[in-house]
Length: 372
Image (cartoon, rainbow, N blue to C red; front, side):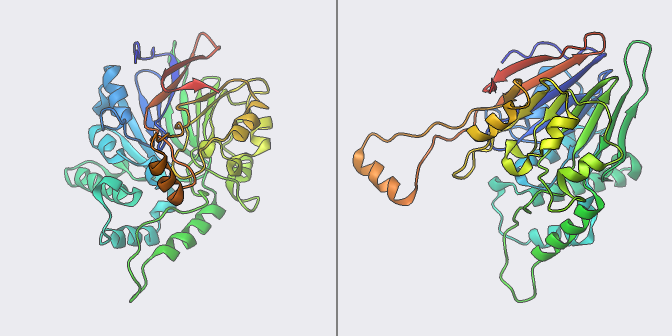
């Protein structure tokens, strides 16, 4: 994988990584400053892919990474996030305001007593590790407002860098979760708390992902929308309908769209594609989800995205169907599974760079990434 050189001071970069389960976004905000959104593990190195990438570009993580963001607590978005934050000594930690609630903190405490395998690295245990890192930094004398957590919700400014004579300014806004989704998330988390006398339960992911943190990055006149795993809400005050209505959403069209929830139908909102993005061929980047029987995005999902743009890029292809030569072995496998696939774990990387002087974005594909 040839990654070339680090972005120029006047370039915005959106790098999306995904091996088949998990995703991470690295954002160059100009002037050598970086934002890391979510985390996944590089199967080749077993390290957080963001740290591998920063090392390859010779970026000094401790000072260059200004914020580490976790959009929600599902494990496929959090694996390795604590290691990134530990390395990014000067970074502020940002997460959805839904995780500020007392019920979630109680849930973390209860989950520590569950027999969760270390290799499963659930999002809850990862989040607990992050809180320990922040606690240690404050104990060492760091100011609380400088390390976080920053409990983010819709219409909140998370980052701002002023323009220089040669580099445009940059801002990062949260477009979700809305107040309505925060209330819903509170009730769902509370429902997971163990009851007295009830058997212990392993931590499970909330569904739908309405409390996910969606970010908008403005770099001069260029805009990127990072959709996380946000799905469509059941009311106008939730999900993508709420994002479209939020005051912080820019009126100008978005150039780069990190497609939410692996391109699934339940995260598709037609008005987002028709009215929030460029009217002609915006850049859409998506990570796959190869866990379970249904791979995302499906062929139908890709076709739906391509109704709006021909520039759709995915970080990895679906895992191939596995074949077993011995007919008796194959028959035995069929008795317990409808189908079986090779394990999809090859890392892919889609990199989009926009220059302050050249408005046409460049798209580069590395590893398993491909144009859909």
